[in-house]
Image 1 (cartoon, rainbow, N blue to C red):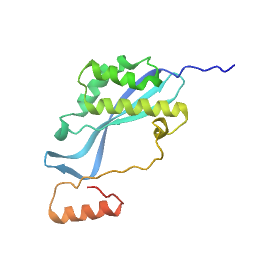
Image 2: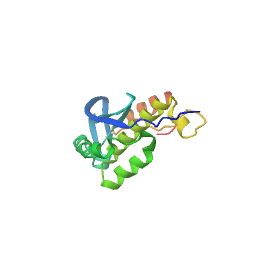
Image 3: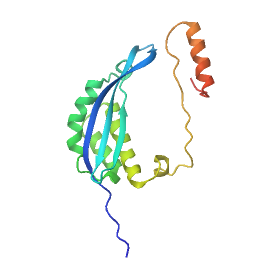
Image 4: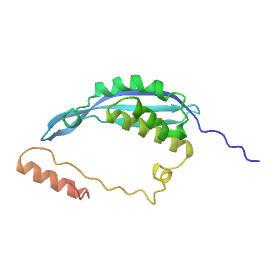
Length: 165
């Protein structure tokens, strides 16, 4: 006889603000920032497993702020505590249906839930979704500035193997 135990439940969620100084100003036509005012989210499960997520709001792009993310978590936590981590999609839908939270907050919560669940299962995230590998294509933004800076930035990005800017 095989005994299958139920996946652990969410026992705690912490959202901690963190200001990260950038190596150079990040600017777009919509605005610029000297630092990233992010928030780190930690989800703890009843068996002691921990998962992490990060909220990266950018006021100039989507109007979201670190303060809005922190305020959202004060209200999100009671919706998620006690939830079965294996039901991460249902948790996400419940949070989304409750009100219009900052996208950065919802993203950080989902990251932390998925990190905790896959850590509990002992598998990488891509395996949970049936992926065939772990390669990732990404892009990088050339920040605002003069032509010389743009050329140097583009060359540095290309030299890192990134093909989409």
